[in-house]
Amino acid sequence: MTEGERARRDLELIYRAAVAGAEPSALVVRALDGELPGASPVPAMVREAGRIFVVAAGKASAAMAGALAVRLGDRIAAGLVVTLPGAEVPAPVRERFRVVESSHPMPSEASVKAARAALDTLGEVRAGELAIVALSGGASAMLAMPAGGVTLVDKVALSRELLRSGASIAELNAVRKHLSAVTGGALARAARGGKVLGLILSDVPGNDLSVIGSGPTAPDPTTYADAIAILKRRRLWGRAPESVRQHLERGNSGELPETAKSSDEALARVINVIIGDNATALDAAERGAREAGYEVDRWRTLRGEANDVGRSLAAHLAALAQRRLCLLTGGEPVVTVKGGGRGGRAQQAALAMALELERLGPGLRIAALFAGTDGIDGPTDAAGAFVFPDTAARARAAGLDPAKALLRNDSYSLFAATGDLFITGATGTNVGDIFVGLTGC
Image 1 (tube, one colour):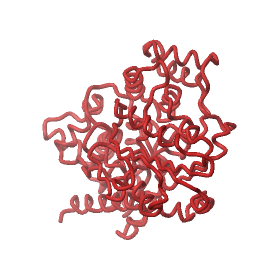
Image 2: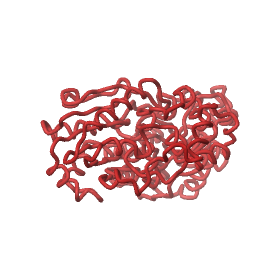
Image 3: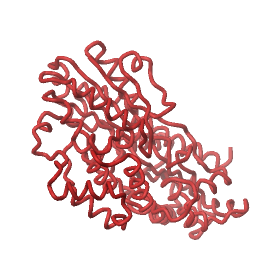
């Protein structure tokens, strides 16, 4: 086995350890047992409830619902599980719940049907009963019902433009919530007097409950005015569909009710528990790295433009290159799309890193992996990409220009040519992106 092959093996081993540490069903069980931070009231909530209703949505919905089905059994009166097409659904879930497919990252008519079914399910909950809402990353697109007067086509078009503008997930969700009939606390409001338990697998840095899945069971601190300001700041207000501008202006003038705030009566009956997040995965990755014989350095959360993130990590690794060390970090960088290529934020950051490593020294003993814990990086079949000091040189040898590929946002094509794509398939979890960097390997 060559040094490069050993490095790839170790990088994948550490990534797999991270994903295993964020396995949703085990985390749901720990929450039901009251073992996680903030979960101490959960066993009593479940024990004292009459009928129990379940709605699970997001990339980890099948696994989360599976744990609930096994643990709660006949106590579940009704339930809905919203998955992506082709997701593996455990037998207990199919036996206990209605399963519907939806779409991501852009909502579709299937998302509208799923959102309507979720509202109908929770609308059956009465006082003395319990609604369990199991949420994971992707839920805001998979449960999407535009507010009155806004068409799905217009909402999707605006979401695409926000993504292309480099808007953060917080900005994207602030706008989405004010164009939605299901997020911004709306699911909690639908439960009609029953208690609501939110079990949340977070893919959002900082675990802001109002941002994860656009906060269907959480108070929303943003306003119609904030949504308008975001669109203006991203220079999209003048190009936004007329139905969107009219709806936001009516809301801003007080003609439409705001999203649920912390004082909302419905939210007094809600307990939300973060069952896992990016740190959960990184903790598991750290254990895996130490078992593989690496010293571990935990770096700051990944934020900002993917190009800047990649370059900064390259410089940090180059300064550590004489030690046998594993650098771990995670988060959710953004990409301001300027070209028509194919890729995702992990692949974009990886390509920026490859160019910087080449500049800093192609002979350095460095290997790295940028990847999404869900196994999906942007609209591609790759989780992310491996990076080595000779990546850019190998791309040129294959007839590609790495600098132009970076400008065109065409990282996928380049890494496909160099053999450095990291393809895992859907992992069944989603706690954001992670970065694993090895030095002295």
